[in-house]
Length: 334
Image 1 (tube, rainbow, N blue to C red):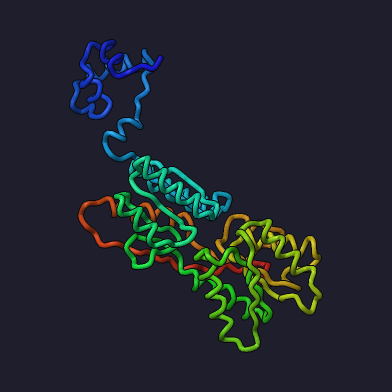
Image 2 (tube, helix red, strand yellow):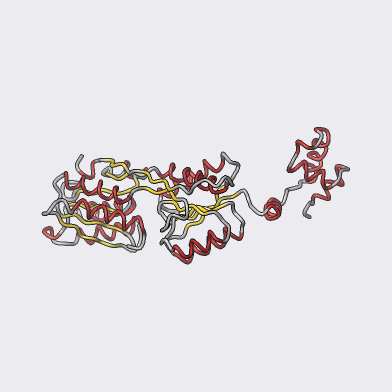
């Protein structure tokens, strides 16, 4: 049988209000009474209904975080950074993965709003300004993570992915590569499109260089392996001599599909560079060059922006943009 606050009050010979004060404002109750109520709680095995208390208060102590792919180590680090910063405020993070499906993203937004979270951190599948505006108009604060909302009405934290794409391809060009392929995911994902734009800008400066786009259905190792097998099965004269991947998971898959299944040597036959610099990049069979972005810092900064939104002082909306960093390893011929 569920033990109620009334049961605790009866066992401790105090009022329900006193029990409530012990649970929520113990400084207003004498130490002797606190000890008596706590003894009754322990004896009866009372567990407070925190959800009900939060609903009465109008907000929970939670933050919603919706990411594109929970299987991607980059987003795991973003979540870790958000959790660490939230914990310092006595708050928890509720995690949802959209798996790049807009309907699932919308369902999570509705769920978190119903749960009355303090706010939502969102890595959008696609920046639907009308949908996001409708969400923020409902009264739940929102921060865009790894992207921006048109018009700048919502705080955001992101990395300059156009610059990141330029860094990757400029490096490949500096190693003498000229036939470059870009392996990306769905073009509607902002990060994929921006990294491609950066690659094109770098290629535009070298007249004899070419860029081929190999679009995959998702940003996973398996889709990268499929792209690698496609490359390996071509005649040697039709293969690229370098591949830039939209993330490290794709790059690790390309490495498997070309080097292991296609017997192509990396970097001798194919230079390869990824994006994110996840932990697996350095420990790959051939250590993977990558464009690093500060995943954990991104998560922590997103919570910081949310806390500013919750502050009633009317601080200006901020947009934080980090710069990526090129990490050169063996896969591009260090």
